[in-house]
Amino acid sequence: MERNGTKRPASPGCRGARVPAPAAARPAEPVRENPVRRTVTRARKAWDRPLTAYYLIMGGSSLITVLGLVMVYSASQITALRYSLPGTHFFRKQLLAAVIGGVLLLVASRMPAKLLRALAYPILACSVFLMVLVQIPGIGVAVNGNQNWISLGGSFQIQPSELGKLALVLWGADLLARKQDKRLLTQWKHLLVPLVPVAFLLLALIMIGGDMGTAIILTAVLFGLLWLAGAPTRLFAGVLSVAGAIGVYFITSSDNRMARLACLGATDPGPDDRCWQALHGLYALANGGLFGSGLGASVEKWGQLPEAHTDFIFAVTGEELGLAGTLSVLALFAALGYAGIRVAGRTEDPFVRYAAGGVTTWITAQAMINIGAVLGLLPIAGVPLPLFSYGGSALLPTMFAVGLLIAFARDEPAARAALAMRQPRFGKKRAGKNRPVREPRRWNTMRRRATARPSGER
Image (cartoon, rainbow, N blue to C red; front, side, top):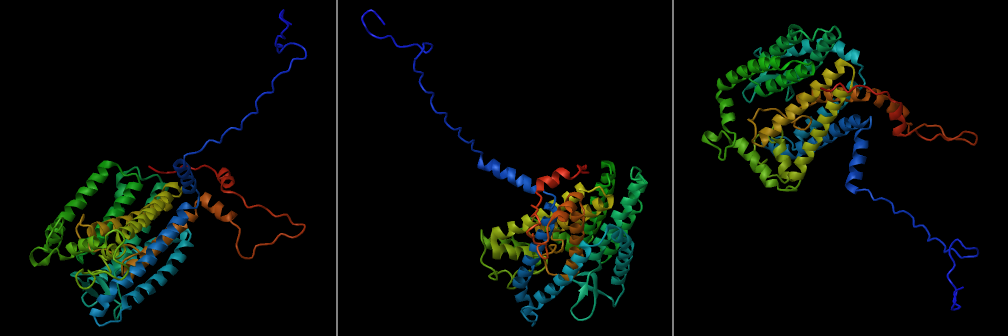
């Protein structure tokens, strides 16, 4: 105590002193993650799953085909009525081709690589034989100035050059795979021969009929195979210069091709309405706006836009479904192309790498050429939009090629393991009283057990 009688406050060390109770610890606030970053992380995890390419190819090709059937039905009604045919004439033919193509897709998706390699040479020989038959009078049929069709009776015709794309992909992939196994691709003569001469033979047979668009796609497939084989830049420059010189000769020797080239950036139909198709394709896209005028409400398909259901079906899609519809189609083709590149980059089988890369180059190059022509960025080449435009000759080989991509995507080691761990929905055993219920394995468990493999990408 102090002298004045007041009590001194007890120190904490003194006996009997009261120590104030510590304040209750506040729970730590959870760290809030950025929603954008969380979405990106989830998207990356989903994108990196083993079955992503498999589902993209299956879903993308199915949606493109179904939407193409809808647009063929919408765009071809007026053309059918103009020829005194039922309004569903072209749609029924395309639907039949899609059903047959679906069967071919399923068959191709179940084919082993050994069987595909065995079929490469017969398919190549068959395509060359049919291309020669096209040039025989009485057998070959000319359509729009190009003689590259064979009539099967009635209104059914086939275009052998479409089979030539598939033949070059399979035969070229088998050839390069065998040479890679023997380590011969480091030599220029083995890299070029006989791949380039056979490709030039197919190009010559196609150009005799006057089909410049298919020749460009076949050239793109050839360059894709050479790039996947590791061809040096000098070799690319040499082959590209030769192909470019041949292309310039064929363009300058045809008034029709020169007229198509002159229509780039045209703002009026020009003399003799040479740019009529290109200009009205842009009109159709402009009329569509953001969300389109409605399905079936196109104005340009009423005789203003030639080939509305074949080469310029993308313009009708833009007019009826608007910018949203055209961007959806572009997104589906982009997803299909990415999945094909992913399959080609992750496999260790050289044949699968070359075949998947060739099919991806074929589909994406043809889509770019068709859409670029409709947008006025490229000359009109007269090629259909893959899986979308009317034409069974183009649809059947393309769906078979998509089936190959599905088979390759499912044959990846990680994808095969993921499919093996999936439980069947029908006929699975139920857990009894003494039978424990096994929890399904998670993706992360499968990914940890899957062995790391080199990507193989350049």
